[in-house]
Image (cartoon, rainbow, N blue to C red; front, side):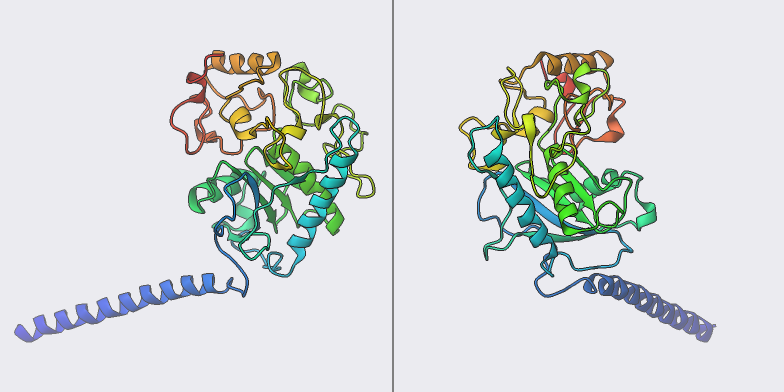
Length: 338
């Protein structure tokens, strides 16, 4: 009997070792998968900032099963980003409605002077992602990758396909490098410029040339789809912004005043405060107040009832209860007194 007991104990001990070794091997395989993404010059998190100013941070983002084409380290992303910002400088300096001051976006740089680009691999395979990929990308970046700084726009060069060539709201945006409409570098820069305007809240329903100025259903695009400006299509030979850049509409923000442009004007607007927190300040346009009061009356968030681009950090799982944002306590609709 004693011998049988000893044999049982021995078998249990050996089984424990085998299982532990199996789990350890599994762990090593997982680590190996992470290690396979490591490359010289690649960064897996936002690097220390050289300024605490508002800025745009870029990610090279892949699905769990995506091919790594190394856009973050082979110079392709930096080339496109700088091209895009050069076009912005040209467009702002030549805008006939503005102050003729050349402006660019404030970009997130590392201490070595290079654009700070973070490598991101999602935890879902491509086919598992939402039809509108940003619906999965933004919560993943905010909740699992710590991209929570409200003084930053997080913009992805996503090496996947999606319904459109790009998607963006206030706070986060993406271009989709595998989309058939995103082929040449110039096309990538053009779509990035378009989507970045949406991260700034453009265009808003206080502008009569925007589709949603009728207050029925919001679209941040122009009524005139033939107009060759950044809210429609960017012409590399003649990049233009149009009236969203500068206008004389009272209580309606103009893109020229964004905190994300440099040189920054004396009284800039913060798109997160206005279009996410509904802290309107001097921008209490009647169209904005109309939408906010409609939302308060309904007691829930209705996607079509917007006055600008969507806030990317909205917690969509709570839309039926009110208007909630990641990282913000409570229902926004119950905090405002307009």
